[in-house]
Image (cartoon, rainbow, N blue to C red; front, side):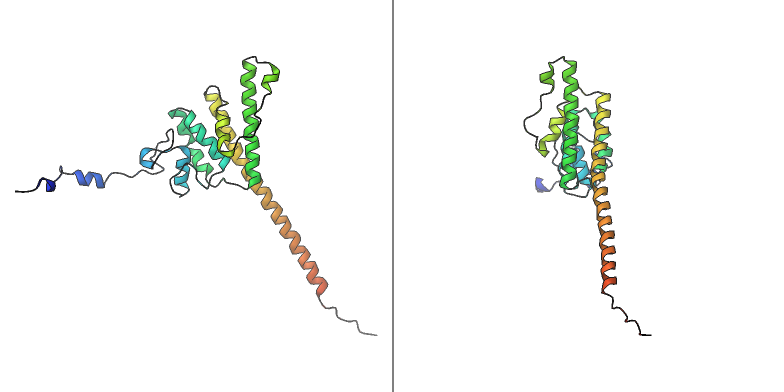
Length: 213
C-alpha cells in the first residue's frame, strides 16, 4: 500500500506557486497601517523603504524624520483614492533626510501650518479669540509631529488634500535649500582657503637678491 503522505497534489499546483508574481514597487498598492511584508501591502513610507533599497520598514533611514512622520499619519487618515496620490511622494522623500538644522526648520514650518489650520477651524466655530491663540505647551516630538498636524485637519477634502501635497513639496524644498546653502558656504570657504594658501605660498617664495649696479 502506498502511504497517504506521498499522494501527489492537484495537477499544476506546484507550478502555479512557483510562478506567482512577486510584489514590486510598481505593482504594490498603498494601504492604511503598518504591514509585515510587501505581499500584505504597504504604506507610503514602506514603499519609500523599498525604493531606497532598505529593509522593508515604515521608518526608512533615507527619509527626513519630519516628512516621514507627516506622511505616515496622512497615509492612514485619508481614503484609498487620495492615498494613491502619495506614490510620487514615496519617491520624492527618498534622500530627503537632512542635517539637524534642516529638520528643525521643517518641524517649525509644519507646526506653523498646523497652527494656521487650527486657527481657521476655530474661526469657523466662532470661538473666543483667547482660545483661538491657544498653542501646545510643549513642542511635539519628531515622531508625533506628523500626527499632531494631520489631526488639525477637521475634514479631508480635495482642497485640504491639495494643501497637504503642496506642504510636503515645500518641506522637501526646505531641506534642499538648507543643503544648497551649506554647499555654497563650503565652496566659498574652499575658495577663501585656496586664496589664502596661494598668498602664503607667495610670501614664502625666496626672494632673488638684487644685483648692485
